[in-house]
Amino acid sequence: MTQIIRVGIVEDDTGDRDHLGALLRRFEAENDVRLRIHAFPDGKDIVNRYRPDFDIVFLDVQMRHLDGLETARRIRELDNDVTLVFATHVAGYATHGYEVDAMSYLVKPVDYFTLAHEMSRFLRRREATTGAVILLPTSSGMARVRVTDIVHAASSRHRIEVHGLDRSYVFSGTLKALQAELSEEHGFFRSNSCYLVNLRHVAEVRQFSCVMSDGVELTVSRSRRKPFVEALTNHFGARAS
Image: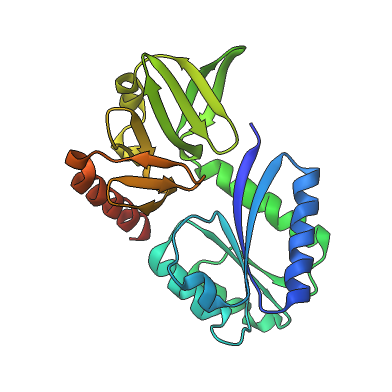
């Protein structure tokens, strides 16, 4: 299954930002990955209402309002899992990366060979730490799906539909049985009788619904809203601790 990688680019120079984006698109085209790239013109723009949804973030060191190192510190207050990579014209900044557990520094202008090497290194690290997988039935056999890549699951009359980042899986079964495999320790919560939600992918909570990272709005029953919000708070709190 093609990997979905959520990438942040924090760069105040439009040319450097576009250049890095182009290198990443080349890497995407030459490898079995799909990149979802979100660019920010300054550190303050990514830390404002930051949610721990990125897999890797590229940070310019010198920016007008909030520099890369301070941006990284603020991100680390909320997210210990994201991989951070600095990009700078001044190699001497590299020693500061240890303070925020940065994977590496790229010296500008970044060339494709260096970028591809760092992305491959990141993918190897990610593969080693991705965690649990689940086997889901398909028309041709069984699919190995990363638990973190599941957005939500829905049930209707013993028909289960599991919605992943890049495809869906439909099979016969019960949500109760699936829930036994996708327990709360993996960050899942039963929002009502029909939906099993991956808390990692909750983008917004409304009065009696939640909006997922793919834009789908799911019902949260009145009786489960309070424990749902508590589970969501605990989930993101645990990831940030």
